[in-house]
Length: 70
Image (cartoon, rainbow, N blue to C red; front, side, top):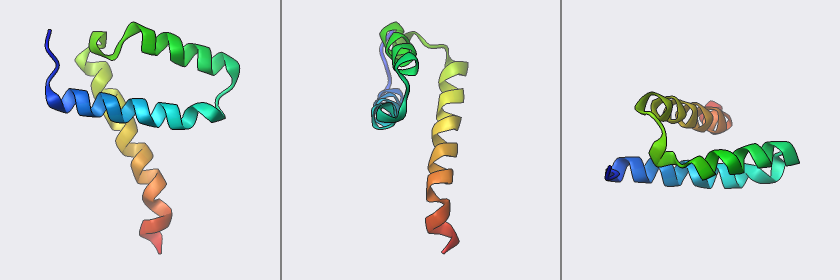
């Protein structure tokens, strides 16, 4: 099943966020993250992907709050 460009961009963005956060994870969390990545983003269901998109947006809003409140 071919990926659309939006899905690829969001997947790449999520991958970058995960890698940036990786240094703050415990060894067990890193292992779980690696296993999840191994299963593959392309095999995820649309509902799972939608929930990840919502989490990305929520994380971006929380990260931007200090800037927006000023």
